[in-house]
Length: 297
Image (tube, rainbow, N blue to C red):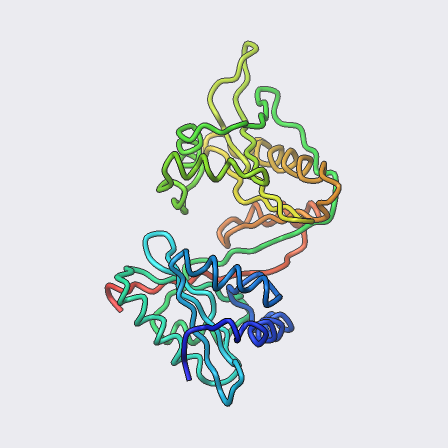
């Protein structure tokens, strides 16, 4: 039986998530919490306010499937489907129907690269793989690297929304999500004490000039993540990105509680992935982004 998630399901949802965690081939975008209390705030209470819709599969009183539908970019995205047994296709069909009823033009899903069964099910339903994102991590380390002589790296406090937007657009060539954020959304994002922006500027005649690149660092308990790093095309290959990475690592590890730094790279960013490996980063996971065009499905 497919039905909405209820509070009484949360202990069994913890068990289902623990089952997923045991094997990377079951991995898919899912809640981060691993307790009934945490899941209540993440999925039921706060999730409901964010226009989430959660569904579960119940068989003989046992929870064997979970998925959620929520707004994402200009369309929707899925947590899951995470299913023990053969009913995953029915749950996916239900979610697609709900996304179409909401008027979403597209629907996204994020399985682990090794989750062959779910990837096959998504492709059977018409989803197409867009790219794979690889996540690397390194324990506490000194990654210091000097920038070129004409470059200074500055901690932006607070970042100017328009400067950030222009630099993001100049650096990025394939992901435009942040360009749709309003000034208010950007201010709110960087107002979080756990989010930091470092910007590399051209330095000449004792003054800062145009922005050349940036790195965005986010901290979470005992680890930190480089959420975005980019350099304008005409200054790539000069060590600016490497220096930004080192500056972000130094800032992260200045907090004694931070024990790990994570970075990410898309499958076309071969040079970045090779650099991370050379510096000692280890691959933690690989996530495939799938998209379904609901206007044509």
